[in-house]
Length: 356
Image (cartoon, rainbow, N blue to C red):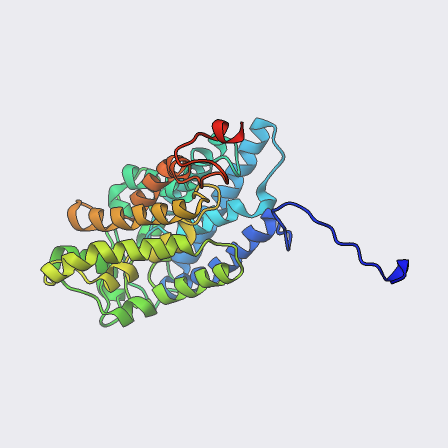
């Protein structure tokens, strides 16, 4: 074989990168995946949902720019992470949530949940859920005031509570709901109906999105499809939502078998409320979630377990937000205790002993 015909084989150590994907590309694809959910929210709740999404996103962008300037860091708005926070925050809020409160939530989400820790890659909890948790504590009445979707004039007028003035008493939307609700729809969420009245909403309604709830949690099927897009693009660890759904099923299943009149079925648990949105787009945050093979299953399992326990035995109808925040706090510990054993090391040996 001549010199020209010889092939050079390079042997290199892992990891063997097949394709370089930048942070901006990943974040941009997450935005793409969220846009159909936002579009459905606008279609279901009208201009109130549209302006809510715009306000939270704009609030997050302005807060990010402000803190970058104050800290002397380059402006990181262009990496799309702040847009994701704004979109997710809006999708977790009631569609008629007062806009000034939404702006406050956006400021807290970025200021307290992200910039305080150093920006992208340093936050210890999901920023959108930090903002949501703050308004849950600060404005408990507004955060639990729901309005039905598909009202006849939803593209022509706001839900009255959306335009409430700052620091004024919450707007009573009872009359508005009575005259604007479409036939067959109610302002009560499926979780509230099941918990307090033991009325279970049908799976088809939960899948299609013909129910009340937060702006972006109503259509479980749409959220699932958008999440699968990221999983197929390998921009989301599918094991985390899988672990959440398995754990939620294993915990809620025995309860349902013991007393189906009081406890909901596992399918209802998975499809209702914010579990699907939280599992697909919040628990899978690459910065916060553990990366070890066993760690991701344990992390997701904790979220599924806590969600069911809070829903069924707590005072709140929803538990996804607190379950994810608790798992976020436990993530470093989970990653530490689930580290794979170093090749050649005996079980229980420390890293220093293995490398010596």
